[in-house]
Amino acid sequence: QQGVRLMHSDFVSAAKQLVEEGATFNLILIDLGVSSPQLDQSERGFSFSHNGPLDMRMDRRSGKTAADLVNNASTSELATIIHDYGEEPYSQAKRIAEQIVTNRPFEDTKTLADLIKQNYRGRMGRIHPATRTFQALRIAVNDELEQVKAVLPLIPKLLVSGGRVAIISFHSLEDRLVKRYFKDQAESGFEAELEVITKKPISGATDDVHNPRSRSAKLRVAVKK
View 1 (cartoon, rainbow, N blue to C red):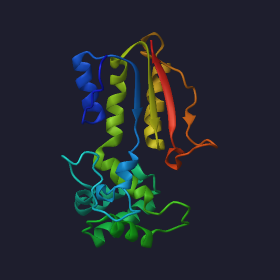
View 2 (cartoon, one colour):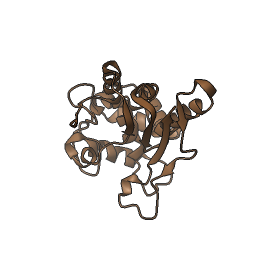
View 3 (cartoon, one colour):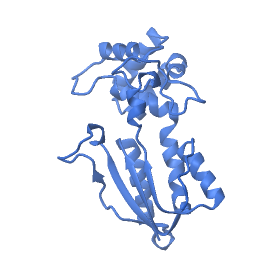
């Protein structure tokens, strides 16, 4: 009986290593979300619910922190990140970016979140005004969307014929990439490596959901031909 193998790595590096080793699987589950322990530990700097250092790295062994980003990027760079990855309207993203540049440096999550809240324009809904900016910074720090783009083409190489891949995404930017890849596979005819099982994603927003953080989740499944 084969034991569990743990790999301290990102999706792409792990997938490439497994491809090189010739490993294949009957089932691959890819969870694109941030883990709850990462969100709940203030020292990781992902959340502003509890104050902590402005870090946001998935892997603290390397890479630039969110503090490095907000304290050194130009106004236009920050505005683009907040707009593209946080899906804030560009006028709002530019306003936030200008305030960040004017008031930096920032070292902790609460100071940055408070600044964004004070300078936010428009109606404030149920979510904190800094939520989208924090999402944008986290995606940029960890290069999350490029990770998704790069790992998707590696999946067929790791599945046996008839093997399945299930991918859970938690926001529209991730899901859009998975949806597009599955759509390309569905339209590739005889060249397709995967057959899409879920014509529409399975939503985490069910009446009996026990984990509020899973409400935005979408599950898409495909099988190796």
